[in-house]
Image 1: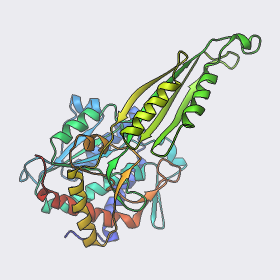
Image 2 (image 1 turned 30 degrees about the vertical axis):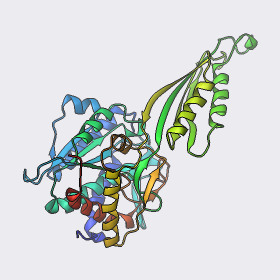
Image 3 (image 1 turned 45 degrees about the vertical axis):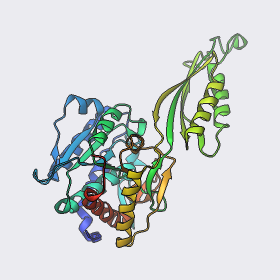
Image 4 (image 1 turned 180 degrees about the vertical axis):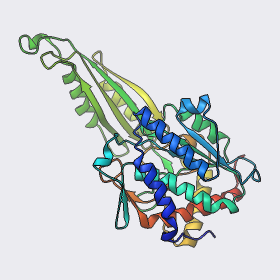
Length: 376
């Protein structure tokens, strides 16, 4: 059994966490992401991992890939660890939520989702290294928060070649581990209108903003448990003195099962008309818990019991890249990251007391997963 590290032994991990948090990496900032990925390559190399060259497929995916095989002594399908470096926080968010440790909490943009998970995974791998029976591959992407449009193909390809997939996304609020996730659908809404002078002849116009606003109220009003619709981005018009001809929005929908997904599609289709186009922009598929997922959770549960950690199997309404691997039927366990709160908010923070136990949980899982039945 790899023991829970003493908090004093985690100073290097916290220093790494500080470096990652201070390197702001919003999904829509290419230069910031490039700097973050360069930092990630340096961090992986410092831990002795073989960092893959920045090939065309990695560059297109905006990803970094590295492998640990204990000097070539480990072979077979690897354990794949999935992480993402991008955050929802714009450059400058550090001014509102600066890196700091306040009591038993560490603060900063993206610290929980999921830079803390990346640091946790690397520390777990370092401790598990002498005990591994399979190689470990780490794939860090930079577009997860926007639905993984660039990296999905690479994620699925690497998952098909892996024995299993571990995802250190944040733990559930109760410390639970994730064995399934709801489907996540992203829609693009585009409204059209008829322009006119807003001061002199407003009645001659037909406002695209008004049409879009009515749609937002109608769509969000159809949300029910297990099928939510939420508009998070909206814009329209060019001049305040002109009835707007164009308006657009983005909507995120979460479906707990196939029936609710079908219901969302019916709701969306029913709202669209000749003035409002609604297109499915991307989708994270429904991840139904399978036997491989249950086997991974069973191993984690046994380890947690030995360590004195409480865990539970949870199905999450939030999406992750685990949606893709779980939907492929590849054994996947998600939510292995640290505990905390304030996801995507100005007070995002990580509970430091959870870091050591969760490192030990993942380290022992890495060491034992080679003995689990897989489909390789």
